[in-house]
Image (cartoon, rainbow, N blue to C red):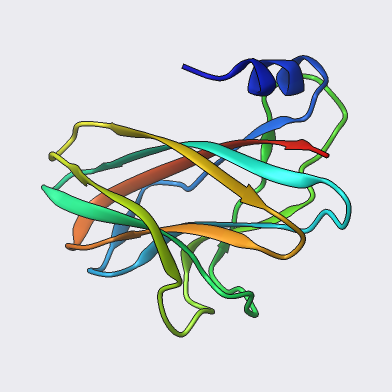
Length: 150
């Protein structure tokens, strides 16, 4: 369930999702990373959807700002047709960070069953959130949901 703050941001055109294309992930891959690039507004991350085609665990963490590498992911404005764009850098299969950041949370995913994790993370300028898979899988998908606010 999304909060009233998320729903207000959605109606204002300031709520987004970031999703990777399903890919063959190695053990300990960073499946998806989102970094706030807005110098004034904070990015509130409120939920993670995660799935893989193998029984595995996932770790949500706050990586240190890096020269991000991987497949670019564009944030989707959840107010379909709104002109606002997410001021964020997002990468799938991210490889620019040397080590996992501070752990925020974790969870388990059964093969081919989506796991949803409610989050309360606030990203200020150039702060990031990421999700790593623990065991290898041939089909891995993650989506972060968030909104911008002061």
